[in-house]
Every structure is written in structure tokens, then in C-alpha cells.
Length: 89
Image (cartoon, rainbow, N blue to C red; front, top):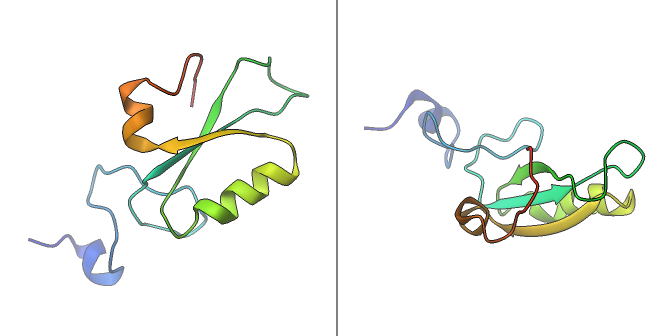
């Protein structure tokens, strides 16, 4: 059965699903954008934003122009632990 959100927002993530970090987006996340702010974080620390396919490029550019973006990997890879060493989301 469809959740109420999936009826209002086609493609919306089911309850409990990992959701895109873009403002107002309710789509399921597919990508992990690992970043850090060198003025605030040690070089090995990684913060994360999640992105759906539609917002991956926009969020990557936002972090990239600030020099914050360190890596972009699929959520599946990230959850396996292949792409992270010192993450604290």
C-alpha cells in the first residue's frame, strides 16, 4: 500500500527510508556526499549530505565551490563501509 506521502509526492521515500538532504525534497537518497569544512573540522572528519539522483549535482556544486566536498559515493557503497573511514554524519 502507498504511504500518504507517496500519494502527495510521487517518488517520495517510504517512512523510515533515507531521504535526500535537498531542501523540500522527499525522494529516497541514492548518493552520499562526504564533506568537511577545513576551518572547523580536522582533515579526516567527514560530514555527510544525502542526495537523490535529481539533486546530486546541485548539492555537489554547492559544497564544491566552497572547497568542502571530499567524495561522492552511492549510499550502498557508503553503508558497506567501503568509502568511509572517519565519518560522523
